[in-house]
Image (cartoon, rainbow, N blue to C red; front, side, top):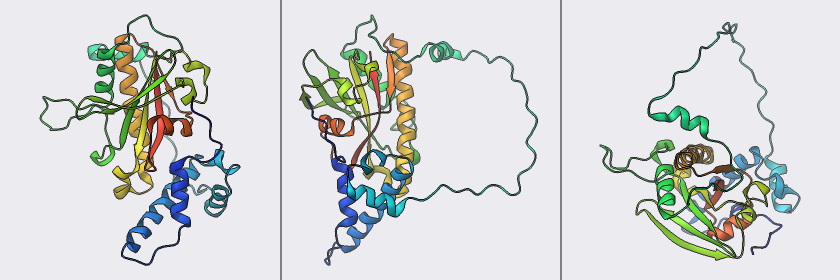
Amino acid sequence: MAVEINSPPTWLKALLECLRTPVRQDRFESIRDGLRQDASELLGLMLERGFLARFESESDTVAAFSARHRRPYSQSAFTSALDPPEGEALGPPDNLAGGLTDLLLARSSADRQASVAFDEQSLRTLLRHAYGPWSGFKTKDRRPAPAAGGLRSLQLFVHLAESTSLQTYKYCEDDDFLDGVSRQRATIADLCNDQATVRDARAQVTFVYDTRTNSPKYGARGLDFALLEAGHAAQNLTLAATALGIGSRCIGSLSHPKVCEACNLRTHQVPIYACALF
């Protein structure tokens, strides 16, 4: 079973090290400067979002960075605001075509296994509807979830729970293929800070942000766009699961050290969201 590491995860330590390391006086100087600037912007955004709070008491380096870069939110207000419009009551909504209304109403956060089978075909259907490409459209690469600038920033990892182990695969969406990553004596609950609501989950899909995809264009804002993209894909996943009679529960509290170990993540890969399947 994976062991809890009471220190910042590898990717966070690498970003901090990028800021602390002196710039080498060689042909890679400009590249190193760019990396240090990107790392600073990304860590600053993570600080504002509260992602570094849990590590401040565990690492002097994180605490020092937070002290230097913490800044209050803007208190400015619109000075030319007009009077707000009067409220207006809305009538009952129309039911959407294709049974989408019923599907939206039927979706709920599950905590126990459904009675339907969860097999390879079910998993293939869920992953394709969540994030995989579809053919037969005018566009070459039609995807069910939007991405900022068309830059797909996510990687999906699938964890399958067995009686004594946890198998982790990387979803290669272009090839519709699951690439084996690791097998550990662990549970899905271990990946989610031992949350009781996921102890009966049969599988979990973890959304990982690859910082190399959109940060060259958007800088630190790339993380915001990746979070939005993960929300779109997770919504697709939960609705597809509901249609198949499979329970789902979205998870925002992840044990980053354990997820990084199970998925064998590198410094440019950050786990940001997950969906447990029952």
